[in-house]
Image (tube, rainbow, N blue to C red; front, top):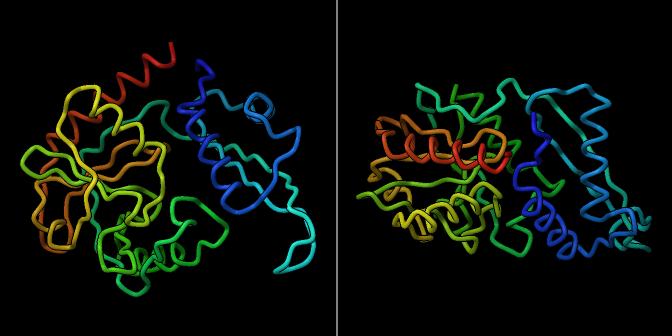
Amino acid sequence: TSGEILFYEDHFTRLQNAMKTLAIESNENFSSNNIRFHIHALIQANRISGSARIRIEVFRNGIGTYAPEKNDSSFLIQAEALPEKNYSFSKDGLRIDIFQDVKKQVNIFSPYKTASSLLFVMAGLFQKRNNLDDCIILNEFGNICEANGSNIFIVKDNIFITPPLSAGCIDGVMRKNLLRILAAENISFREATLTVNDLIAADEIFLTNVSKGIRWVGAVKQKRYYHKISQSLSTLLVVLCEIKKV
């Protein structure tokens, strides 16, 4: 592979923003170049020759339980090989449903991935219990927030729509870059509040994250969806990612 860390600066910027929001202080080892160096070293040490998923976990060092005496930090990096070298578009759509038991609160922590992941664990158990491929998480106002580990887009009348960050969704790196692509290609899109009714009325639905790219939704409850437009966007994404690697 080319050794390219896809959308690295976006990932690192989001991590810095999360640390600032959580009042976690970095140190001289926590720089963009140093983290990049350690990622490449770990990939080599693990002898990963294809695509990989990288996880960086930053944690506060200070003791003091709920009143930390210090806010300095340490970090861990994990690397896991992925089965495919490039994004692929599945011929089978996802079967999903709406997780209703717990709603996601909208606050300053909503855009970030934190160790407090109980909501997503419970959503995952709901997903497994009902033999689903994924599930939709609602925010505290009952509006569409995201999927379990992915951002969500719908297509209605050839317009792409995704919930705004103010709806409480994760500030996904793939979401951010797809919005950039749509803007660059002059494709109509908007960030707007989505309800369950909007979901049911959509022509297409797809989920996005950096690990898996674009995954189309084939069914929500009894409603079936198309995938022509989302497949075209997935093809464009693959082309642009390959150009980025050159």
